[in-house]
Amino acid sequence: MAKYQSINPYTNETFASYDNPTASQIEDSINLAHALYQKWRHEEPESRCKTLHQIATAFREHEQEMAEIMTREMGKMIGESKGEVELCASICYYYADHGPEMLKPQPIESKLGKAYYLKQATGVIMACEPWNFPLYQVIRVFAPNFIVGNPILLKHAHNVPGSAAMTAKIIKQAGAPEGSLINLYPSYDQLDDIIADPRVQGVALTGSERGGSSVAENAGKNLKKSTMELGGNDAFIVLDDADPQVLKKALSTARTYNDGQVCTSSKRIIAVKTRYDEVLHELKNSFAALKPGDPLDPATTLPPMNSANAKDKLTKQVDEAVKAGAKVFYQYPEIDSAGAFFRPIILTNVDKQNPAYDQEFFGPVAIVYEVEDEDEAIALANDSSYGLGSSVISADVKHAQEVAAQIETGMTVINGTWISSGELPFGGIKKSGYGRELSELGMMAFVNEHLVISMPTE
Ligand code: NAP
Image 1: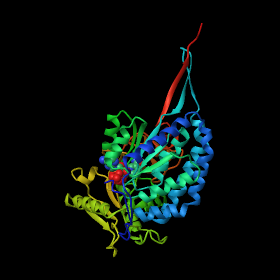
Image 2 (image 1 turned 180 degrees about the vertical axis):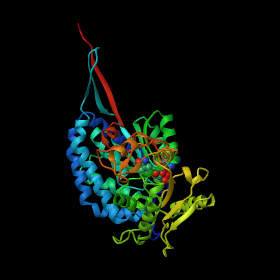
Image 3 (image 1 turned 30 degrees about the horizontal axis):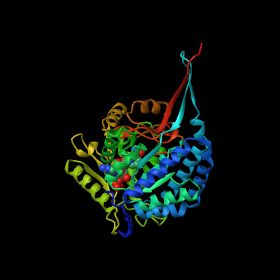
Image 4 (image 1 turned 60 degrees about the vertical axis):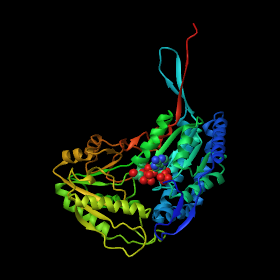
């Protein structure tokens, strides 16, 4: 894509468009960011904490305008947009408060001499981000790297350019030095050139397998470190002893939060046979209760998808799944609107031959599987190209932890669904990508672990 336009998916109105940068704008941006990296190298991480606090506070102060632009560009419900801004403020506070401690030198026991490694900045990082959490995806990379001392160049998704601009503006106005985060609207070819530039030392991408493999290939070709946060097909395992109220609450948002457009949405609901009917019933009730409308209206509970293209793609995937034998257990009634509304749907009877079995459905589509027992549930959960997140619903938390340990994913939430916070690592395995964002693990993504060892002199 990379044709940057703001199109309201509720009204179909195109309200802004943005040009690609010129070659000299790109050169100036890389220069500016690189110069900042060189300055930051001589400063302690503590020196940036105050500014990151100010940035966190600024996001809180600008919550309404930041939330509104996100909602207008990609259709997220306004309440969820505000929640996203607050989450991002909390992530900034987290790294401002805890980041420097994580960057202290690490002593190493060695018979060869006094050894330790420093945790140092590496340079400018290119961040390629998706539209589904226009602010959060950026802050996941920006906040830790700001404390580390790695400036960020941002290439946001083609459909949220206004959110990208506002993010950069708020960060700048809060007092961040020029070059801390530079928002660009590059074409794919320009992005390739930026990644190849020797002053750029790493690439963080969150997005699809398609985008990830292309950008990772280019990073690899240029020997640039990368982190890839890609798609998911998360299993939501319902065990025999699941607490009915916990199950009901988790199911109520499992497939409709952010209109199902979350990498860690519970895309495969796997219920042991004793709980299968109850799961279908609860899901149907939660889908049927949704109220479509303008996502800027706080009364709306079913927003449009992020774009008409996304709706068309999802519709095609569902049609193909049904053609291959999936049964429609429930679909939300027709919605009288020109907006990009997808009617939430529950599919069953998806077998291994069905293309839907191993595909990510990025929207409000729940695929529900009935299994004999827990072992079959775990085997089905692991029979996936993806390995991002998972959920286990069980009244016996210790046992659920044992089940979690058998699931091949980067994250498991017990008795809940998608969750994120500054201190919790986020990321997956298999085709869901590699590396982690957030937490101490994420903070080290683009750190130089610089060994220093003093040899005995006698
Ligand atoms: P996408 O198409 O891969 O886009 C992500 C970013 O990469 C955008 O900035 C996009 O730019 C850019 N991009 C895509 N193809 C590219 C290419 N060939 N060369 C250079 N840049 C390229 O992903 P999406 O469909 O917007 O986002 C949804 C996907 O993200 C889902 O699969 C979801 O599961 C995943 N996701 C993962 C996580 C996680 O943490 N694991 C979190 C959120 C979302 P353009 O917009 O200009 O194409």
